[in-house]
Image 1 (cartoon, rainbow, N blue to C red):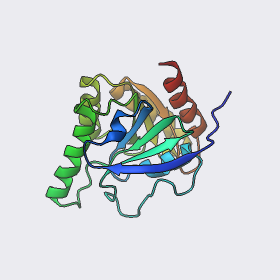
Image 2 (image 1 turned 90 degrees about the vertical axis):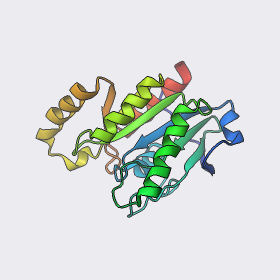
Image 3 (image 1 turned 120 degrees about the vertical axis):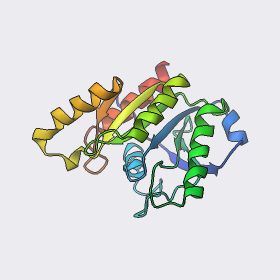
Image 4 (image 1 turned 45 degrees about the vertical axis):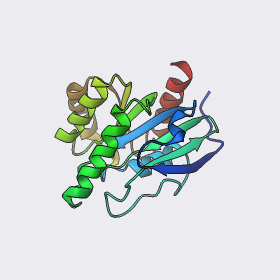
Length: 195
């Protein structure tokens, strides 16, 4: 039985301690490098066009945004990391905000979806993020986005290489042409229900 998205709405953006973190609803956190297609992928999962604002300029998300889905679970959109054109001060501020969310023990997401670029492959920053998530004991699902940018013949080898680096639950997806997005949605909700 596939999951139906009956409702999805923006609740609030936070930049630190907030009462929403004490809400008993499960949080599913989405994190990835700037420009990895995070907003587009979340919109695809939620079957919405522009609920999560994506920008032509990476690094626009400066807060942690909470979206209530089916009145049951929060999708949490974290700022992208590693965008070189941000000032060092802003970049450091965003890095600290992401680290705070994952290490302060205030949020405790049930599942973290780490989005990487299938074409570029995992970067040093992706490995660092995965290390943090592992140290904190989170369940991680890796979504290798942008497989539409790979030739069909390249996909298998590229995904195998990423898998050999990550040893995680990994799903190749395309937010653009919706490839495997239904499967990703199902995996996320199955995890929320069964864990």
